[in-house]
Length: 398
Ligand SMILES: *Cc1c(COP(=O)(O)O)cnc(C)c1O
Image 1 (cartoon, rainbow, N blue to C red):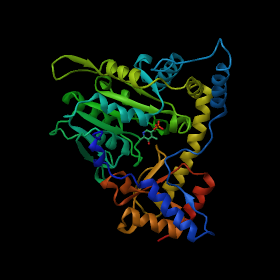
Image 2 (cartoon, helix red, strand yellow):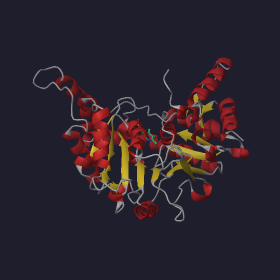
Image 3 (cartoon, rainbow, N blue to C red):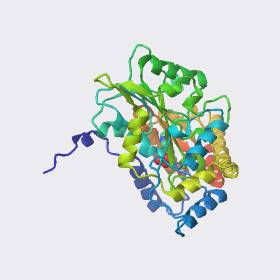
Image 4 (cartoon, rainbow, N blue to C red):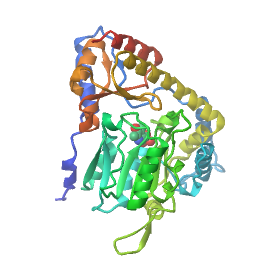
């Protein structure tokens, strides 16, 4: 009989989105005449830009002829894409070596897999509320987590406590679910803390393309010293609408060298390279051609058009909450709006209230951690028409 990984028993049942679907289905069955508007999902809805589609077609056509056919590619990604990503960083004033970039099938895999590189007895800081992947991937291997409390007092941007030592720190900015964004000074405090503690920051910048204020850092490498303490995860999912197409990238600088318990130096770059080469056979050539097109000037223009469309929705939601005097976070440099449930309601109660009184579906904050218990997330990924209609209905409530 196999002895099973009992750590899986420590995972909380992931019922969030199935429970939402269940409650919405029940309501729809009982109220067939009501139009339900879904502003709960963290998934894009606009189709890929035509330039990306062209890039994908180029990839497909290459597969059709013997002289351009591609079999296994480099596990780290093709140079044409690693160079395009490096140039994308450069455009934002950040220098990232193409050789430090690992192309993947998305940031979820990489943020989930990275914990393999670290030993059991690290002090791991993870914010609450949080993207659940960081928590569950550590629990699966039996690791212990120390939660960093995000709340209204710190604007959902937890800062380092200099009296506590940590080895590994997960940060996500712009944040899912709260939409909060660290400014340069705050990120510098985290980098300084990590350098002092010889800790590693695992920085998720999946939403960097939503940042419109050039003063806000779109990458942890905008902060001096970050290459000595940070790994960055990014993705074309939200930048270019690749949630179903699948392409991400992770930067592991060669500077990240730490002493192992036997005193020998180990390079995180070399370890990740070994890990990926062993367990991953690369992202599809066709998809990488699509990603290359996304990073071209024309591709980026089309991506920006889509992001602006979502940003208008975010603005509509934010304006409605402002008019109603409901405190909220995000909604400017992020597709997410995170707000306190009115009348001190618990997040699932507010979910039911919003569904039955305005036929709007959102996401209860408690699905992202205990600090989300009285919060609620709406997303800007709906259509403009539906978002406008939802906000008209919202306006008439309480
Ligand atoms: C959507 C999202 C990602 C992207 O994941 P992919 O696997 O690249 O689609 C990464 N991090 C966070 C916090 C996200 O919300």
